[in-house]
Image (cartoon, rainbow, N blue to C red; front, side, top):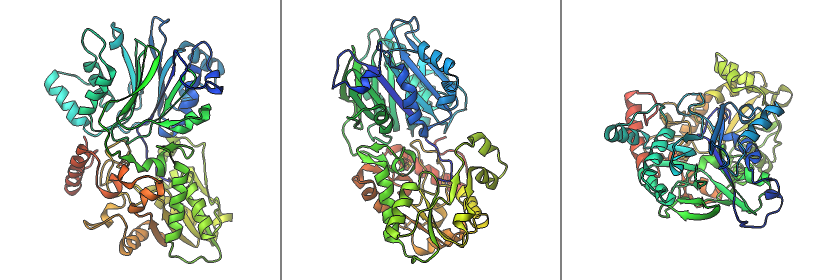
Length: 523
Ligand code: SF4
């Protein structure tokens, strides 16, 4: 995608169990002295597409005075773990060695960019089951209500303005008492009060671990066990790259629980129709991942084929297909093959330009120039079918289109979008939380059913400065992803949300929009 749309993070967990659960092989052969910490940086690198602002770990080692110990730093995984300094990297891995570990990569949709907001959060306590650390991926849609309830009833004070802090207090409260509570009941109780997306990895100083996926399954969570090594991560690709061959998705509303060195799966919330975020397949997830057994690459390729089947522009000489790097590549390849038009690299992405440098540009055009180079040798006098995975705010795409025409010399630009128009905000962890920031809503009225009419498309194309614009229709999302259409969240493309708080927030968002109020809807 040309825009910088972000996610609320990635999580990971590893545990060296007491007894083997499956065949061992290469994966568990990588662990020596029951120390799983050397394996965590590679997993975090593989889920770094979900957040590059901070990274952290908490390891469990009962032989240390600091039974749970947390290390977290601002920056990418390589920066946080000092990977370009082998000595410093080795020292971190040694210091935080342990038989169990949780990890996190963070992008901030709320909260500041400092280590206090980085995860895992650790709560120190003299009693072992009250001493815990956790990390989470998602967004609590009812964050404000939960915060206000705590403030009103229990005289709480919050030092950070994040839902992570709410989860911290909610966990602490449920772990009170004179004996360790049942962690399944703790999760069940959280599920009764939380609304939204919350995949949690948790461990306490008694050596217990839980890995939970929220009842709607909004965010992905994969796990695998081979020999004595249990692993879980937000994305399956991280486990596949470790060598696991039996990777499974954690069912929504269930948790993996490790106690006394043994694992089991428990259900903490009633089974219900899931609402997996379709945007994970379209944009966020690593193209090498599968979510609930549906491949990300296959979904993107299917959407490209469908865009080709819908194409109403004839194929002429001097036509080329150009993906907006990198996430539109699979859709562009499939579209190109089906259309019989060559797919070429007309836009080169500068992979080494940092986020800070891009943002420091004073204009959108300048930041686009530092991020993409349009190749005149490829684009000049061509009829360009520019494949984009989605359009959220459109600001960067407009600048990109300008560059493709002016610097690249394209004769015509036809934008094809492998996602339906984004007409509504997200309240579950994707960084688009107000109606006013979105490009598409002004073009659609109350009768919009997910497939834009020609008049709306022509107006949007004119606004973007392109010759034509086509989107994937919303009703085709399920077949493209290869999943039951009723089992995905389509809130941002239909305005219909899978949770009570989501439905409340969209009413608020519309009121704010009409009143000209800006700011995140749930604040
Ligand atoms: S509203 Fe859109 S981006 Fe948010 S969880 Fe649902 S499908 Fe995903």
